Image 1 (cartoon, rainbow, N blue to C red):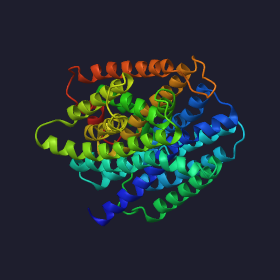
Image 2 (cartoon, helix red, strand yellow; image 1 turned 180 degrees about the horizontal axis):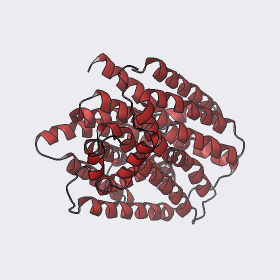
Image 3 (cartoon, rainbow, N blue to C red; image 1 turned 180 degrees about the vertical axis):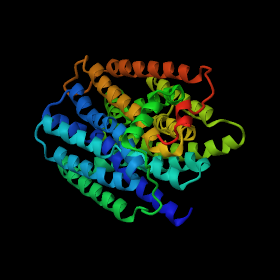
Image 4 (spheres, helix red, strand yellow; image 1 turned 90 degrees about the vertical axis):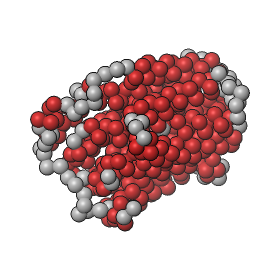
Length: 414
């Protein structure tokens, strides 16, 4: 790996790490903010999911900005909104201000994943993207590890508000590093008008091939991140009756396993493609194994808990390979919008799933310790599994070859 490629990878991976920490930090904060503000499961789901709403709402303009101004400048600038959101959230004494802070964080980190994928696509050969994208996901996945046992340990001697202050400081530091040390001369920028760029986004959304690629992956990714960033902790506490520290340990096991899966699947995908196994098929197999793992957890399979939750994390991020599939389908100048459009759909689903699980669980009454009954969580998980199976059927049904839309071939400047 050349020095310039290493620098691009390191800087944008760090940005995605920050994004991932913000994504799951409420998993550790939940018992404290629930106690301080007297929140219900539905309230907690709404508060946490606003990150994903802000993230999703910013995706279309973020894609245009990435293609027009470049990944370095846009990512560095947007991270400042995330820092401000962390400080607002940490200083808030009412749910309204906390919601505003969480929304700002989501908007601020909305370009971290799309920006990373765009920068990597500009500096690495297409054949290596599944593996390199997987490495970025692994670095981000370490953020999922940090919101497990390490965050629980920190919260043992430091308040959640103090943690928010330092998260804001870290975010500003990463923003400055991207701005100062990010590659400037090599950064490619689009020269089409903003109007034509929005038209390009519309072509992506109106492409049947895009939805064929996205069908299974957006649902599995929506479920995985909605659960990992909040409701996995509730399952471990309410269904498995684990104390906070053992539950946090399994959250970290899940995070480490996701890191391993991101790298492993990225490397295996390239190797298997050379042997004639398509990336599309390999991605589908991994996502199917994720659904099977959820069923094993739901039916209390007689397997070690660490193995089940490691499998949950290992297979949970497989759908990220769909970014590499989509990158091959659309022209290079649309990479930013393709990535952010796919992320838009995923994060809208994360928002809906996280909010929906809270609404479903709230139909049951918690006990004196604030724990909800097993039936509440099984109902929510059962609905999510059914949605994933339905999307899997769409994914595997025969369809037309994944060819570039005629509109894009006719107008490559969109």
